[in-house]
Length: 429
Ligand code: S3P
Image (cartoon, rainbow, N blue to C red; front, side, top):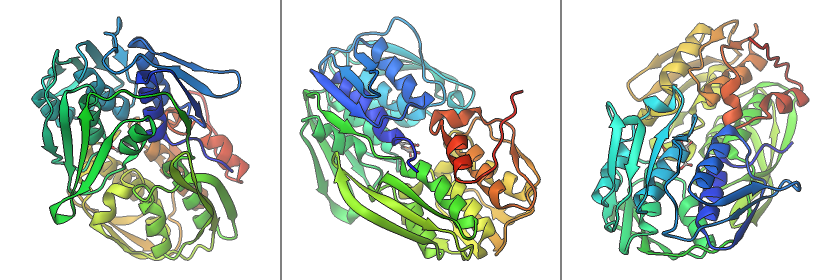
């Protein structure tokens, strides 16, 4: 099977295409709700962004410095990536935009982008606590800065670099822990000059010397490794299964989940490894032997599997022995408080665990838990999908209270999982 296109790459291809001169043609774009919200926002700022009858998306961009103030509020739905990255773009333009979102997004912290973007000259009005709704007034003449990321966040890194795109001089982001580098890679693919330098203590300095013009290009979006993680874990938990996932993105800053599952004893092999559209991809062959064992996940691996801890927790709950996960503070501020939602849900399914402020220790028994619970998902697609995957293996069925957020990142999830033999049904309220 082929899971849908990578969400991070899809967002960026639309944003950069909407900014670039001339046409960009995108194949394999994820058409989940989050990405459609990015498309609508970029249209609202003057770009031409359309899906063709051939399934390809085409953008005709405005050119760096020429985004327009949108005439309506930008409703970003559930999407933190759209909000933070587009806020970066607005900050470097002499325009204003107001962002809002759903009950999940309006709880998420924006201070992390407000601090550096304010240093660059943008002004912000927010709801209490630096939350959405948020109005960004871009700087008439933004200032280049050097900024060391206080949290390992590709969204914050990207917001600053995108503001730097239309800023005179060198904007540098220093990251101590490597986070996904799709922004750097794709800006180069669009013709921008972005440099990455190794500096002291294993850190990296990423610099854009602005202003930089982007030029339309062709983009092939690989399948999303974060989405591929769900059928992968499902196959591992269902003894005797064997699935192949085609054309999955293998960027090393995204593949920590596969490394961890292999350490747990999973039979996963990467076939036909190749480079497509500048990103490493492979077909992933997964064989279910139901013999996973507990592991300690090294903390320096966290950024490369930041979105995969919920589904890893499901595998850990079925594994033989204890799995220890630490350095998870960022899970508290994702689409939901993922640490709490995972822990509460697993306990309801009969799993023994301990949750700390930034850690989770799960005691697997070597067999799937009882299940039979109704799981609260708090508008979080990955919580919903993770527990549905656990329900494939549990003794009793698992229900989630709201499946609708799955459409933000993996609209074909239920259909594809049922094609593989799962029995997931959706009742309309
Ligand atoms: C993303 C970065 C990560 C990740 C999110 C997508 C991106 O967020 O969790 O799903 O596309 O840049 P953080 O930057 O908050 O870690």
